Amino acid sequence: MKKSIKKITAAISAAVMCALPMANALSANAAGSGQKKTFKTYITIKAGNKGLYEFEYDRRFNGTYKYSMTFQGYKNYVGTRSEFGHTVPQTGRSCLFIDSVSLDHFNGVAATELYDCSDLSVKASDFKPGSMYNKIIWACSNYHKGHWEYWDDFENNVTEEVVLLGDANNDGIINMPDATTVAMWVRGNKSIKVGNEKGDINLKAADVDGNGVVNDADAVLIQQYDLSLFDSFSEKQVDIIR
Image (cartoon, rainbow, N blue to C red; front, side, top):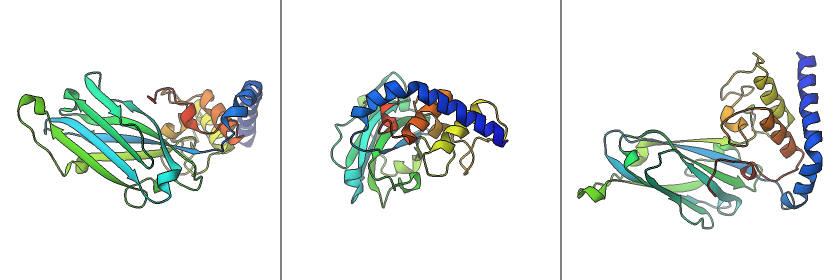
């Protein structure tokens, strides 16, 4: 087992060394302002039979989070028949909105958002309403049909999952063991289980380039981040509208 881990670690290190010349050239500019943690939120809507048409999630950060948390981008999962966007980010605030007939009876992940945090002590478990931010959720029916209904309790139909990108093994730290966990899982090591417990592999956190596939490229990026070759994983996410 130990020999296997050493081989995997060596393989990742070799891949990183091959990428170092280009990475060093890029990092001269990219990593100058200091590293940040990148949090990815998964916003799930359970619309039921309400006839939902418009949804808005207004997030306003509190205290020091107002200056340490920065919105970086989002992705729409509702469908093509939608007006989907994000208001121009203000200091300490972000606002996601969706207008779509596809929201009617929608049940699933509606959007993901990316936030960079300059405070490296912040954990994924800190990313919740109350201490970190206040939220306002607006939801209403299709007013184009001549009947308009607003639900002030719709937040009960919304859940949110937050992951720290790069923390593949769920220990709250982004380092070489995360890269090793990814590489071992890619190679089918049965000791690595998918889950949210410490030592498991969190596939959402492991997919640091956001292409929907966890592979050696993610392991290499995690080690490059550990070596401070770039500032944040938000730079590497390929599926985000900025």
